[in-house]
Image (tube, rainbow, N blue to C red; front, side, top):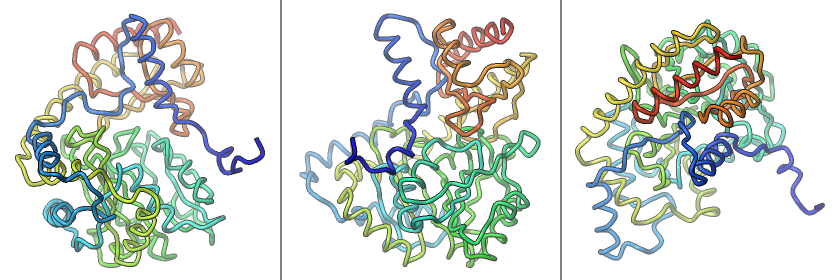
Amino acid sequence: MDSISSRIALVSPSLTLAVTNQAKAMQARGEEVYGLAGGEPQADTPDFIKEAAIQALHDGHTKYTPAAGIPALREALSAKLAKDNGLTYAANQICVTAGAKMACYNAILAVVEEGDEVIIPTPYWVSYPEMVRLAGGIPVLVETKESTGWKMTPEQFEEAMTPATKMVILNSPANPTGAVYTKDELLAIGEIALTEDIVILSDEIYEKLVYGEAKHISIASLSEELYNLTITVNGFSKAYAMTGWRLGYTAAPKALAEAIEKIHNHTVSNATSFAQYGAVAALTGDQSFIEDLRGEYDVSRQFMLNRLRGINNIRVVEPQGAFYFFVYTGQLGLKSMNLCDKLLSRYKVAAVPGVAFGYDEGIRLSYCTTLDVLNEGLTRFEQFCREH
């Protein structure tokens, strides 16, 4: 159809959602499927958060809110960023969005013009390149390696830069690899970005899910100069098990914050009113839920690590954050889509093909599920690897 925008032809559908939908269809037919493809916590949203949203409904908070979010939530986010991240953002520098995905897209739209280049380390979260393309930009993919823990080096960043580079996207802790950048690594990348005023989009949605000696660092907290170049993105989906609530946010220097709010105003108007009251409760209530959830994930992470290390013809790097393993499967001799199709149809195990993340010799396995599902799913995956 001639009337469809040419930009849409450049955009690929989400393979993570495609795998999830295929697995759900099999389950609806009564088939047993062991889901290792999930990108959301199995845990339910804590009751005190749900009760706050229910109370908001009873109190009549069912109308439009200010575009950037209710004042109580923006103030709570300002306090959270100061306490947790060492970041000083006034409430009017924060924009509450319908999920962190929208926060990323708004940030890209606010900065990227037609023909601008955006540097994205691979493996990447599936939507980054597509968002850049929708904004008229050009994704410049930098392939990271197992040897560097799936992290972009300063040398790779500098080599990928051109006069057209406008933005670099950093995701730490990372989806799909679980990589966590150290303070020194962030400083080195940040210093290079400063030389050409390259805007940094820092996606920190998994910040609460770090393990062992790893620590989450917000790059904007490292210097005033980096603060002035960085758009920080976060949300409620992962730490608070609020995926369906669709609540994220951006925090940015004033000029960028105003541009982001303008975009948000003309696209969504505002995030759901009563959900925002639940988010206030999430930020100001008992935070022990997060530590309990992180502890459960760490047990599952160690379990999966031990199992995967026992399989001869794959390789893994221990993830330091999020709730995924990115497994190198190049020795199996199958492209990742073919591998995942066979794994699901013959062994009833759902995984996400690495091609969705820009790396075709690997797959993503998630451990945000029960140990029973992990155990059986990994047993079947090991059988698959032996037979291929």
